[in-house]
Image (cartoon, rainbow, N blue to C red):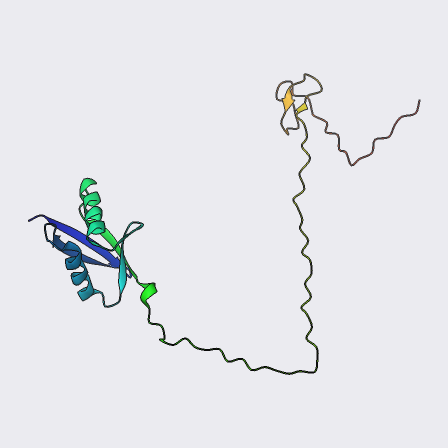
Length: 161
């Protein structure tokens, strides 16, 4: 009689069941045991898959056995699709209102679409002394020469001869 230990997580607590894997109606037996412990309607999940019938439960058990796991971990979640709904939908009563004032249309302001401005790509900078490529440093890593950056915002005075 091969037993399978099934742990079902429900609202933060675990419900542990030991079921006979050779039982003819394994899914029905599991649901009967869980319905005694959980009073609400629920759905069972094995990872991302819903365990909704005998075949899906057997597949989950086989995956558990093949992975040499000590128990099958299932998660029970409330069944939101079967919540009680009123048999007759509520009707919305609309009363026509007569007003002497004309209705104003809502004013919509156009949204300004600001596209990100591409940053100017500066080329690779080189040492004026030895020609080594400089990556944002103030001194040349090769010869130690101080790198003078030309700032485009400052105006350079031309010397008159």
